Length: 115
Length: 108
Image (cartoon, rainbow over all chains, first blue to last red; front, side, top):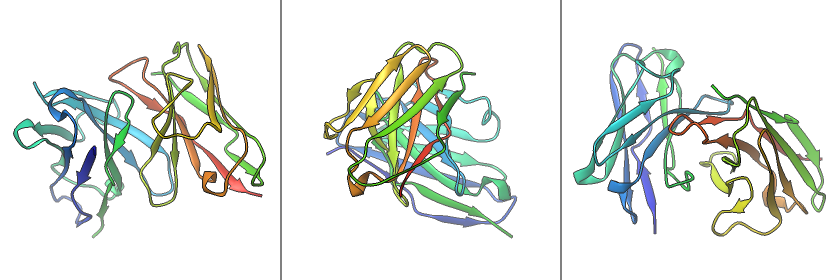
């Protein structure tokens, strides 16, 4: 069974750093692109970017370029999304997704940024 | 950037009725369109890809059509579990994808 398991919910303060994870199993992680999707409270889905774990080729959506960093460790079939300095406006649910048509999705990681 | 416009924003229907959802692209995307369903508190689920191909395990009451700039998702007879938000997504500019704003199908 294909699974993408994300790290747990986070409560952070503005200015703090954060790295969330997405671990794949049950499929060929190292030959599949993995993307990240943001969903702000009560809003729609936004494509953030994607990584190809075999060579860590990363492509960002223009809206997120410079705002986040996407990385991966193919040895443990895990992709990451990180921030160096969180803002309140980063509060959202973040999903990882993979497969040729985004067939597989993680369960989501809720990030709350509040002072 | 390709913009996807979904209509209507909200569709109020009763179980058993037919639902017709629209997605329009700002420029031609051939057939590189997918549809997802999202229920409250859940991750999106792939329904349709390449405009008209049902994903694994998706019931036959879901169908997709269209090409170029105009696409339609049809649910032939709504079941109670079909009331949700539906998003279209284009991959013609892979790896830069875009999603539509969503259509909420609610119980009338």
